[in-house]
Length: 291
DNA sequence: TTGTGTTTTATTGCCTCC
DNA sequence: GGAGGCAATAAAACACAA
Image (cartoon, rainbow, N blue to C red; front, side):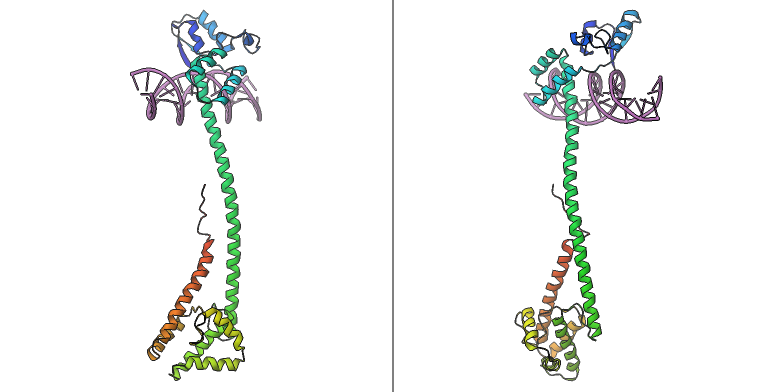
């Protein structure tokens, strides 16, 4: 509420009261009292009647629809107000330049708020779409992880049933591991360098398994190094298996060590690929959103 | 009619630019 | 230093449900 000193002339009220002096169109407005707002008329009445010598209160009044429409159109063209345009608009609409400036200022503030809301909506839609996408991939990842777990468990059960203690191996790896396991037992009684190989050969003939089948697969897995002992080139997770090669190293030169490093490398590769694939869509890792 | 929430008009204080 | 812009705020005007 603007406090208006009584010492000011009535004409200066025009700077504070938009419809003062009233325009022709407003004189027909039934809401107003003969063109003035009710409040303004009341104020004028009190101005006439009271003689308190103090200050009177001038209430603000809303702009007419015509004025607002014109201001809106002008704002659409350019939301900043140059001094010339301000004066021109004010003259056209019967307003004070300051009122026009204030209207533009408030209008810019409203526009900014709306713009923020629009930006927020767009960002939220983007985020929702990304989250939906991420959730789908996450579910897929979990399903695959469960599937992998089941397969591993099944493999372990199969191994346990066959009395072998090799985990997480493909059938061929399990076969090769079992050879190593048995050759270790034999190695305790037979210190020959080729004990494992002999046993492997014996086992192969005993099992009656197809040489070409296993060899083919092993060649694929071991990259053609199968000839040394026939059990390299696959991932072994058993520490006992690793430990077993160390004493054998002392007896048979560097052969065992060589195999161990190869096992290690292959195991690292195997582990890495498994973990990598599992962590690629890790649940713990939030999706990085680039806006 | 009245209480309440929203919109509009206007002020104030601070900041930047010329 | 003055003009103008902006954020925060006040307060009148308005809309509307109870």
